Length: 349
Image (cartoon, one colour):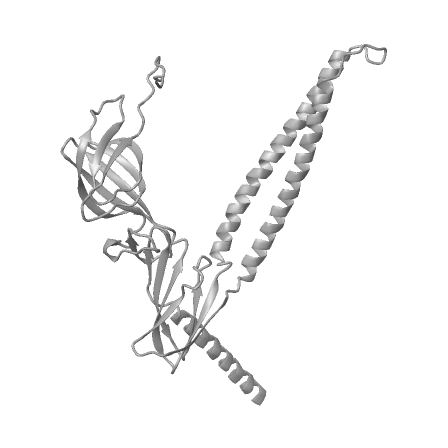
């Protein structure tokens, strides 16, 4: 009975310790995460509640080296911050090892196929270059040469099919490995944070290389002297529930005035709408692209991005928008004219 009681108490202590550790880990991830996307990267901010003076925060694999900042909040005092490599889950590590082994096998397979291709190519050339000489043992030399050449070419076709299959599998494998490595946070790290006292809150901030956003524009014209422009944000992949802000500037030269708040709704959301003067617009016909010149606003610059054009609601193709400085002008040619049957392209003079 005494041994059973001691065993039960030990089990309770172990479970209590595990529960405390789980609560500690959960507390490190309880804060709302926000992502500020720039044109060349992103900045992540997250409030972390520290319990019992210690917390761990997972950092992504694309963390910009040296960018980690930990700011004390509400009177907390930071005593130590340590960054260590993150441990990869054993199942994920095993899966990655299997993918690497298969990748090596496919590499060996491609090398062997390359050698076989050289051999059968040389055999086909050798057969086709033979002079037909009739003899008792070879009464039909032309037929024999043709059969030898066809055999070598058939082997070459087998090599080409095998190589194409191996290359296709290798490409799919590389995509799968990249996705698994990202999910397992291979190359990531752990930030360990110690506070003076038991409880407190800190703000963890860092830069990530994969946090950039890409501008996309809708240009809508209807014959009036202005074009209705909608700026949309093509966002990077992010965790559900992340609050997003985009900045029309680069991390190397941030511009707080260019900050545009995004709703948490997601990708391709409209972040700004405005009108731009249309300096000139070419006549719009079925055989001509939509061509117009816009003038930029005096108080803002527009970064480069993809553009989509509409004329009186009709889609007229896409255009590469190279950016527009304040007050500058830019000619845009949307789409290409269709090819009319029976006509040849005009010669350049």
